[in-house]
Amino acid sequence: MTKRGVCKCLVPLLLGLLLLLAGCSGEPAGTYEVTVGENTFTVDREAGTISGGGQVCRYTVEGDEIRITYPDGASYFEARHTNGSTAGWNDLYESGSRVPGEVLTEALAQEVPKASGGGGMALFGLLLIALGIWNVASPRSVWYLSYGWRYKDVEPSDAALVLGRIGGGVGIVAGAALLFL
Image (cartoon, rainbow, N blue to C red; front, side):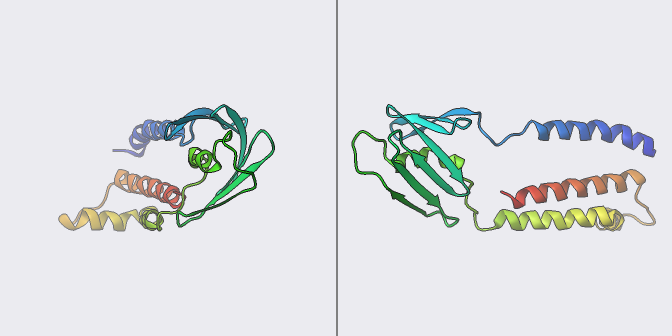
């Protein structure tokens, strides 16, 4: 296969991959509903509000911290630590008319970045990046370790080398994405 033939095959594949990746969004819509226990809350990301239990509260998320401000100005604060524990304080008086801050922060849990799961994905990501760099830098040696040892006096085709480099690039991107999970 000639270089021109390889390009004709690869361009549609790369465009399809780009469209697939562009369509992926881990973020929910601007407004969504969450059920916690028996309560259903409506979260409006654009307005920064959570409503339920007959009240509309404002919320802010900074890093791993959630601050909820009730309509009367009282507030609740909670921080989720990387080990999964939480710490919070309440500067409002107990009142039966308010939804507890703990319930609201549980409803807003997906707004807070997920805590690290111990580094398993990061280690796998680093391995993918290393293999990707090896594929990009020396696709011939990767080909010999994968296929070349099976045959006598054979050289890899140009297409095999190009695809090895492209696969290495995809591995680097995927590994980098895993580092941020």
